[in-house]
Image 1 (cartoon, rainbow, N blue to C red):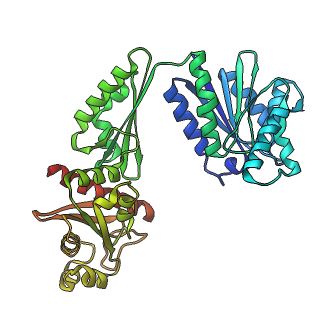
Image 2 (cartoon, helix red, strand yellow):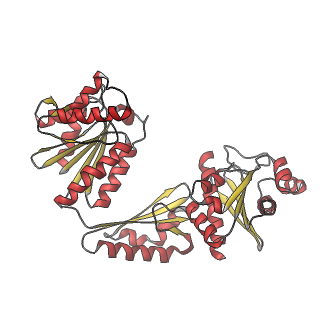
Length: 410
C-alpha cells in the first residue's frame, strides 16, 4: 500500500499571501491514483523547520512529496533540507545545470549567476527534468522512504507530477483500485441533501460526504479495493435516485452554469438576463461556459429602479407599490427581458445584498428570482442571511438552477 505525505513550503504560503492550491491538487490526484494520503503540512522557508517537516512526514508515509523551495534565491532551501535529512552534501550536478541552461536558451537570454543554485543536488539524488521552468525536481531514497521534490509554480508542479511521479507509482505497484465520484446538486441546502443520504454517509464503504460551494452542494464518493468502480457507480446511482431534481450532474466539471448551457443548446433555446442584485454575475457565469454564444446573446444590468423601467419596461407604478425587491417586479423584469431580447427564456434577479435592510425595511438577504417563458413565469424566494458577496453568488446560482428546472420541465 502506497502512503503519501505532502509538504508545501514557503513563507508566502504559510502566512496566507499565496493560496495553497498545490496541496489540494496533489491530494486529489494522489487519491484518484490509488495512493493513501496520510497528511498535508505547510512550512515556511526556515531550514530547521523544513528538516523537521520532512522527518515528520517520513514517519507517516512511504512517499514524501515536497513542493516549492527549488528556485535560485536565498530562501529556496528545500534541496538543502533534503540533503540534511539524507545526511549527504550538496554537489554541483552537470545534468541539472544543463537542464537550467536549456530553459534559458529557449528564453533567449543567459542565466544569471544565482541560477547556479538550481544545479545543486544532494549526493545520490536523481534529477527530474522540468520542461516547464528552470528548477529541476529531485528524487531520493532513505531506507523505505522516497522523497520527491517538485517546483512550487502549479503549472510546473502538475506537469512534473504527471510525468515523473505517477508513472513510477503505477510501475512499482502498491496502489489501491480506486473510484472517485461526484454528484453536483443545486436548489437545496447541504442539510437537506445530507438528510436524504444519511445512511449512505454512515456506511464505511464507499466513503460518502457532502460539502457546500456557494449555493451548490457536492456529494463526493470514494471507493477502494476490489470492484471499487462497480460499488462507486452503484452508490452514485442511488444518490441520484434519491436526490432527483436537485441533481445537476455527475461530472466534476459540469456545474449548474454548464448544465444550463448544455440544456439550452440541446433544446435550441436562447436565454437572456435581467439583473439587479447580482449585477451581471448570472451573465458572467453563463459566458464562462464554452459554447454559450449559441444560447446567450446578452442581458441587462438594471441596478437602479429608473433603469428597470427604462430598459425593461417595468411599470414605475408597480415598483412604487410593491418595491423593487418583490415577486411582482422580478416577474416583470424577466418578462420585459424576454420580450425585448426576443429570447425563449429570461431570468431576473432582484434583492437586498446588505449589509442592512433597504429603504422599505426589506431584510438583507431577501432575494427574488424569476424565469419567464412564453408559457408563463416561475418565481423563487430566497432568504440568505449571509455576507453581501455570498448573497450575490448564491442568488446567481439559484437563478441558473431555476432556469435549469424550467428547461427540464420542457
